[in-house]
Image (cartoon, rainbow, N blue to C red; front, side, top):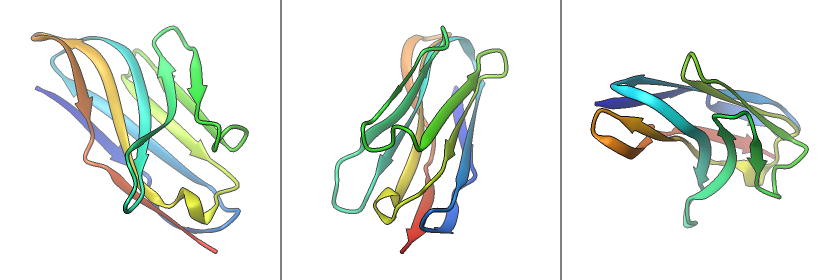
Length: 119
């Protein structure tokens, strides 16, 4: 089995900062990428930022310049530093990994962590 455990969500005022962390564990041979998604009430889940095993990153236009994703392949962790937060960033944030396990290629999801930004 593969497990993704997130931490770091919470409540913050607009313009504040939060840092999310995610750690993968279990029967993992290698990780292709680790990403952060978010889902606000009544909206579809959307990709926020991705970190590929080679170190390349990608961001949604809505968070460029405000969020920074970083990862450690050896430790199987990924972090999301969120700054200049806006109320529209309020959502449940999910860690996702595209990896190779003992059972082959698979997608793994964390349980989600709530981020609430007040105006």
